[in-house]
Length: 78
Image: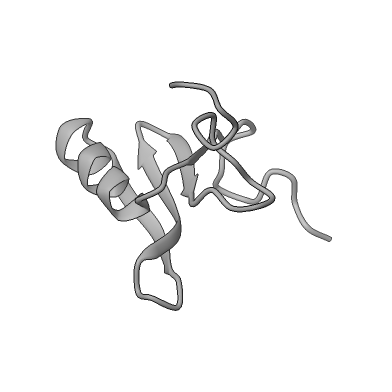
């Protein structure tokens, strides 16, 4: 049976959508002190999913798509 949350992960995990996950990883690690825990490249070699951690917290990152859209894709602003 799958554990919810998976072992070693916190109960709440934000999932943020970025048009350029690699640039977000660079900024989050270089500026905010996050460490990359997982990076999944897409067919083009660019990250399509990643997980970063800081002080026991985890944030997941992904690319917006037809099913998953960030506010900009929906006509909003961030």
